[in-house]
Length: 227
Image 1 (cartoon, one colour):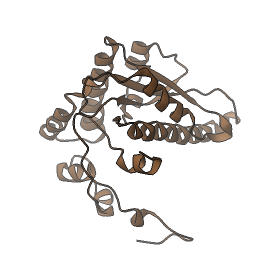
Image 2 (image 1 turned 30 degrees about the vertical axis):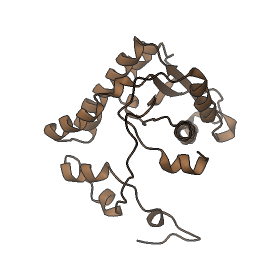
Image 3 (image 1 turned 90 degrees about the vertical axis):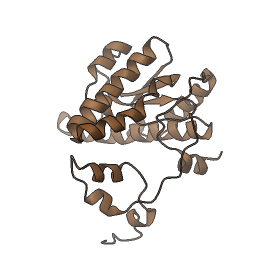
Image 4 (image 1 turned 60 degrees about the vertical axis):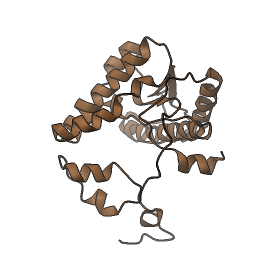
């Protein structure tokens, strides 16, 4: 699969087969992540690839718990019944044979303290590009991934579990493995789905969680086009 196909075919996968993924394939996707651009070539990424059979279910369980309590329960204020329906989708997540944890490591001191937040913003963009490259490479190899940003809500248990140094900032995590079933084509969604979102609104959240915005609605040539 070429890069363009892989970008368009990539989807967030929640259901995995327990089939092992060879380490050489994992190294290919990690190298793709390390090929991402970064400001002043700071390369702020640190990857931890986890396949220890004792660590994987604990890590998956921690992330599932944070998704339920931190994301759906607190951040999005999702009604409890709907939250339970959503969490049923996560029941096979611990079948993924690998997990990739991405952290920010501030190595180079590029700016004075009063501008350090700007450098962090730049490096977060770089880390997003790195994880995007990793996910594209995984899709090209027939592997599934799923972006979890929730470690930023409660990083300490994961740091303790994986012996991650305090100075590292956990940014995201993703399972890595073979899909249980092929992905479905995502429908197109309207801008109103995003503009009209309200916390705690079940229909609004259901609409937000599926589909893609048409590229014409978010792309401008030469000047910004008011919608």
